[in-house]
Amino acid sequence: MLDHVVKANVNDLSDLKHRLFLSGFTIDPLLLGSLLENELKKGKSQFAIYTSYSAIRFEIELTLNFKWSIAEGKYYWHSYIARHAGFGDDTKDFAIKIDLRNGFQVSLHEVCNLFQGRYVLAASIDYQFNTYNAWIKVKAGRNSKYAKLQEFPASPHFKLKKMLRRLPILECRNKEAEDQLLLSLHEGNIEMVTFHDHRRRRQCLISADPEHKTIQIYKKAKHPP
Image (tube, rainbow, N blue to C red):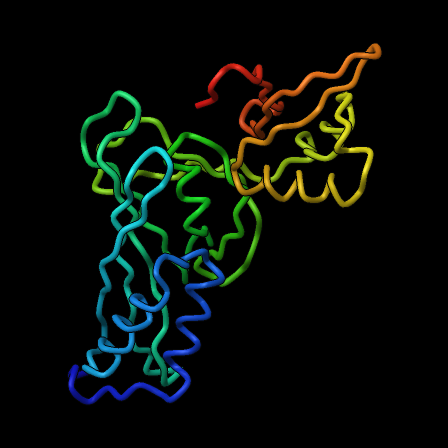
């Protein structure tokens, strides 16, 4: 297929912008939308947009890849690459590639948490287009171009809600607060909660650790990874 014969549909721009928004790509939406519109006008069968995102502890360079689908007659967001220099003691560039058609559906915020060695509960699409949920983290040791994601299938032995309720966490006594806490932990966040036991209250930071089937608890004063 020749690049110059491709013509974007009237809804392609709004559909792609909405897809980016849902995945947390809210960085300068006007600029991102303008870049996307310009690329669509060129009529190439595939193109990439380059941008960046400033996280709290590091800068992320982003490459967003788009392709034209002959079968669907429209453009779609194929994948994206997130890269930042240095990870822990590693001074080499470290990159994660997210394949949105056959792979884990991970938002920009969740990628930031993966960069910091945390676990994320992500939906995945296999090559037979079956969907399933699995916990993922960056696999130790990086000898390839992109870091590999280690998968921990959702296990009946790791029920996050049940494990939280075994702890004297005040937030779990309220359904809405508990649901918000679960969602945040699924995204790989570290959350501050209030422990209430023996008439004493103390605040701690917690995160999910499905690999070891536990919940990591950090003292408030200690900076988590």
